[in-house]
Each structure stands twice: as structure tokens, then as C-alpha cells.
Picture 1 (cartoon, rainbow, N blue to C red):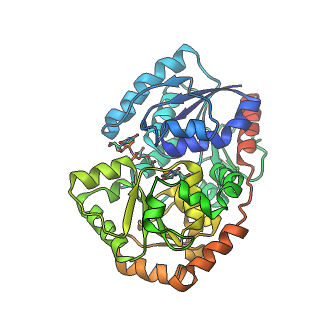
Picture 2: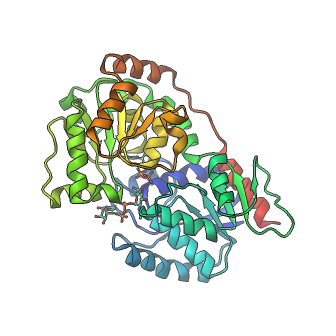
Length: 386
Ligand code: UD1
Ligand code: UDP
């Protein structure tokens, strides 16, 4: 089968890389990069690091308002797809690139498959939530990472959820939901051994580790990039939260957040070391050996949960509730509230136990393999040859 696989941002390139070997074995895949992320450390680097071939089409859209960005992506994607129509368009996650790919597929009446279907934060102020809802309602083949996500789809009247790897829905049913596991979990499982050596955190931006005297369990690893955390008030609140946690923090900063900090003249607390976005393996190592992670990233939140690293989530909602303390996980929603963050850190990663905990974790963490890539590739084949 011929698939057009649309990516554009860091997490999508990572997800596509996790799916690539299985997709490539069974299908002819055209990788189309919208160029939503364009800095080498946000995009290009990951193709090489994770063995993804260069995209067959680079749309070069770059940054802009959401309307301009999505419109430019659609405008540049449509002729490519019209020129050589694929059997299906495959999109990942919940970004503007996901939305643009889905809208082009729907408008051209091409089959659309969505990986990471069914996630809901139930907060429509999040641009990603709007994208998820629209894309899930346009897709015909929905790959949910969990039963919980599939239940969210059922609650919206989408498809008929099927567990396991079979796709055969009711006769005549065009919309199918399948629980396939999580591509990012499988990449995490495959990369874990390369991150176990504590020396691997030294690969983080030159000098940062030495400058902070980082040792396993002795630092917090942070990433921040949600739109809600880039307003001037929010920037000051979470920077002050990081300062108040009073432990060394390695902050791998998204360039958009970096720009917002600079434009608003925000002071970075002395215990916070800003480093550029890191490669995938180094990020995993920084997560594995940290005393705790502080993040608003969906991917980093999940990786911390799989690795067993405590996490403070700089949000009030999450589309990954299974990672939370209330559901047996080790992460806590703390918003931008220092009191909640301090209490959660003391509970989940007490100073006296953090080093021992990180050392044990690095030696013994096991991440289960979900088989998502193979399930997706097989399901696409069955579905498209139906
Ligand atoms: C996007 C996604 C978000 C995802 C994140 C992953 C949307 C609405 N948001 O957010 O869901 O979690 O990617 O990282 O699609 N910039 C650069 N260099 C780059 C890319 C961006 O400097 O390579 C800066 C620009 O100033 C830009 C800003 O970051 O205006 C925001 O970029 P954008 O693509 O709009 O959204 P992200 O915040 O990256
Ligand atoms: N990541 C990375 N380098 C970094 C920060 C994150 O490689 O400096 C990886 C992280 O390990 C995860 C993915 O990027 O695999 C998550 O992407 P991001 O946080 O950009 O987006 P989200 O998951 O919130 O959509």
C-alpha cells in the first residue's frame, strides 16, 4: 500500500521514527514534513539520530499564527497528494501538522488514519485538544494507545472499539477504532539500555552537567513549551517555581519558550541551567537519572512514567491520566503553584532518597514493549486491502 505520512514537529518525527521499520516493511511510505519545526535541534537532528530517511517532501511552512500555519500546510500538501494520490494519509498526535494532514485527507476524500487517537484533556483552551477532537472525528481508522483513549472515542460516538490486533469491524462500518499500544513506549523500551550508564547524562549540552555538578538523583530535569506557559505572567510563575524548588534544574528549553523568556525580560533563577533542546537518547538519560522531572510535555510525562521517575506536571489537566498518583503513577499535576510543587516533590522524590532511588531505577527500570508499530502497519494493510 502507498501511505503519505505527515509529520512536522519533534514528537511527530520521533513517533514516525518508531513506526518506520514496521511501516516500511509492509508499505511504500512517502514521508511529508510540513516544516512546522525547522531548527536542527527540534527536527533535522532526529531524522539522523533515529534512523528516519529524509522526507520525500519538505513543505517548509515554519512558524505563524495557527490559521496561517495550517492554511500554508494545506496549500502546500494538497498538490502533492493530488499529483500522486496515496492509498491513505497517516497522521500522528495533535499538532497543527496533524490537523492540516487530516483536513487535506478529508477534503480530498482520502482514507485517513490517526495514531494517538482518543486522548482528551477536556480543556478546549488547549490548541492540541481542538486538533485532537477534529482529527478524531475525521479519521476512519483510529489507533488508540490505550483502552482509556478508546473509551473516550466511544463516548463521542466514534467507531466501535476493538481490542487486540484485528480490525474487522461490523460489516459496512467505515470507522474503526483499534487499541494498538504506544509507539513512544516502544522507542523508550528500545533505547533504555543506552541510557542506563550515569555517564550518559554528560552528553547534555557541553559544560552544563559539570557546571551544576550533576549526579544521579541530584538534579531535576525540566522542559516547558505549552502555549499556556508562554504568557508573560505564566513564564514568571513557573520560573519562580523552579527557583523555589531549590535543587539544581537542567532546563532543556524549546526555542519558542526561550524567545518568550527573552522578549519578556524574565530572570532565570540561579539554580536553573538552561540548555538547548537535547537529542532523544540524551533526553531519555536525563529523565532516567533525574531526582524528578518537571514538565508540561505529554511525551516527557509519559516517558517519566514508564521509567519510574517522579514527575511534576506544570499543568492543571492531562490527557494521560494513567500517569498520575491517583491512578498508581508517580506524577502530580502542580500547575504553576510552588506550594503544590514543593509538597509533591517532597512526597514523590524526598531529598534523602532521591540519589538511591535514581541509582536503583537506572539499574532496574524495565519498559514493556507494546508492539504498536507492527499492529499499526498490519492493520493498515488489512484495512486498505479490504
Ligand atoms: C508544537 C505543537 C505542540 C507540541 C510541540 C512539540 C501546535 C499547535 N503545537 O508547539 O502540540 O507539543 O510542537 O514540541 O501544533 N520555534 C523555533 N524553532 C522551531 C520551531 C518553533 O524557534 O524549529 C519557535 C517559533 O518562535 C514559534 C514557536 O516556537 O513561533 C512555536 O512554534 P509552533 O510550531 O507554533 O508550536 P510549538 O510551541 O512548537
Ligand atoms: N525531547 C527531546 N529533547 C528535548 C525535549 C524532549 O528529544 O530537549 C523528546 C522527549 O524525550 C519526547 C518528545 O521529545 O520523546 C516529546 O516531545 P515534545 O515535548 O516536544 O512534545 P509533546 O510530547 O508535548 O507533544
